[in-house]
Image: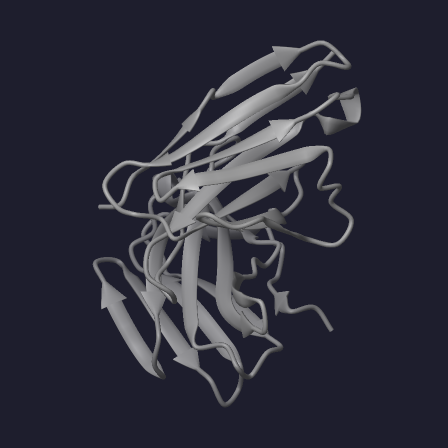
Length: 115
Length: 113
């Protein structure tokens, strides 16, 4: 089955620093990757959609200058949380899709804690 | 009206019983529907996909879709304690900007011994 690898699984950083999260599709080419955020006991919230080689599309209320997304190849997308603050602490999950209308496959998520 | 509505639960069923999870969606343009299972602290994993009206069975799982009623459900037969998780309904919505998978808030299922 389709495998999506996400790293790191857990990161603790100090307020004001930046954190990069990687998402890779291991056995398929992901034309589109999605980044979600999930706070405890809440539903998944889509942050942005990225297509290989083009700028990401951000959901309303998500700061594009704070959450930098790069989708440089068909197998790799990165999310960089810049100048992280404690309120950015959350569970960040990437997902990838091959063909249009096919299901999303999720990475294992990254638990970010900003101190 | 929310795009995807699910009863948050918890839905409690005894071991061996059938668990029935329901979902309604607002966009008549939705063509593809997926059910994901999410254990606490973990990312979602795909259980079922369904694209046409009717039933689709895969092992202990059966997905049911009724596009006219904008309703999709998931039945879990012979429920096991390991099925205890949150189940997310996710229709794919075609928008001008492309496809967007929209998640419901999920139904928490508890299978009791």
